[in-house]
Image (cartoon, rainbow, N blue to C red):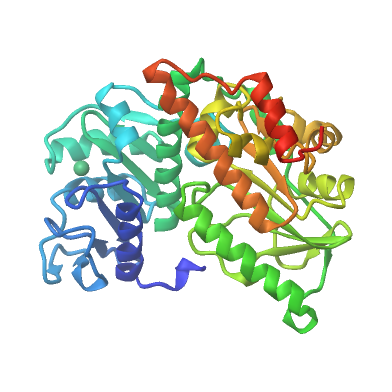
Length: 431
Ligand SMILES: [Zn+2]
């Protein structure tokens, strides 16, 4: 969906309800603003329930200071204004108190954004602004000082976080991705020693820009099967977002259409609101003109070519799976029979594999061994179709969550070898 066509009050109301529904603010905390081309600021109101906010509740503070609307502007209006004053390139600010970032804020630490390439691409380095009284000019100048130094994401001591953007969606994706970093680092620290991407590894990722030759394609030459698959994939992307398996800015899914073609998520994309026409068809190594497929398109294509029975591939950064990815540990599926039956043994592949050794990646995965943890790059899951790949991804993330949950209560005991042999026999699993 293209947010550029929304009025600021509609975009703010949509985004704050998304933040509230994703439990990234309480009903009273957090505020968002957009600065329009006239220098007028559209901002969330003070003291109104974030769970029921409508576009009509959004306040406009004109550039001359007059206030229009049925409410008072947010009490944090001074720091929004202070940020825009020092950063003319920014037109949106998101501020909230999501739980994992608040944990870092009260621990007086900044989350490391080098957990996966996308989180570093969105946030880069993050600043830490010292404490100030909420709503005060003093807090505004402390935050603005960090934005003036070039930071787009600033942690606020004993308060929360503030992210700026060229658009509200840009600021929101930065905010959501930073919360993913914080959540993952907290979970990974319970599991082992988090590993962070080096400069060389980040370089490897930035060289992976995909340029495919193109072909003309449009609804006039789409089959019913393609239209059906586009709608099915979109429904699962939206569901994956709501289930916490994808974030707005991360997660790639593809689905095979026929022997030589597949549909894949584009880049960039907001997984919250994907439309069927946004997916990219890749056929015989070419992609449909006017669209950019995900960076992972080549890796997915390598898997489809190696395995004619694979009908869908997903690369996801669900935060429980990501804790294992960041600790460079495989996920043990000998937890529940369901996990072992669906996923069998899960492999661990080095970060570089998806960039420089796609053949190794393709030979590791199959319908028999459908899941792998990619070091600092999430998890990769294959299935016979979109439904089966989604099922496996959900089970993989639940398994990761259960293992993480067992750690503070003494850890887990894997199902023993004899019981695993019985499962293999009872369910006629291939050996
Ligand atoms: Zn606040």
